Image (tube, rainbow, N blue to C red):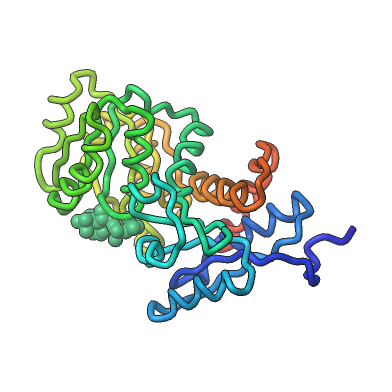
Length: 299
Ligand code: ATR
């Protein structure tokens, strides 16, 4: 059987956001439907803000099985759905729409995607001290994952301390046993880290946009005293493959991983929601290689 040849039975999937031109999701989902010989076509749609509602409702009217949603619409899109899964509601962001009878249901697959990525890298946040850098959209999903996994101590570092405090306050009522501290990147957060953990052992998750292509020489944190306290780190950026943040973690002799696996697994979980079947590990590995090669070819 010839696969992925568009015919009258091909179902539509897609991505809405702005911009979407450099997204890896069409490649990721094209590979997934090829792997399972399924008739899906996944396209990237740049959508202007004033057309967001029409785009979501129009996609549903056209019969699209599902959509991914990326920046800047992960929050706003919630206004145009017929249901939102409770965890996505708590995170305040939806990145996956699944077709239902009367509209789309919104899910957040970034959170479980990050959880799977950490597992894949052998990082266990349960019972660990974790420093989360950033308090924006991605940090929301990361914090929710840390709370779900029951990290022992969570320290949120952000340029704007108020935003970190707001993020912590938002989640605290839902996880009353969690220990969350916040600090700004301008204050003495090293002293705070040592006060929280005398063993000086922390897992770091970098969830700001600092260091992203083309600003590849930037990092939210320069101080080597910080990196000395990090046993393992993840930078949620994947372009460049090694950010300055990751390079400093590795220079201090520790393991660092980029955000490509989070992208991979959030896509896989979305695909599983759309198709109702499980994606095996060997397929995930194969697609990871395809994504890595694509990024190399773009560098
Ligand atoms: P995203 O949805 O990708 O997380 P965002 O909501 O705009 O994007 O958040 C970006 C994050 O990067 C924030 O934590 C932001 O810090 P502020 O809350 O202080 O704005 C952080 N960030 C962006 N530029 C930064 C910079 N130059 N130095 C330090 N942090 C920065």
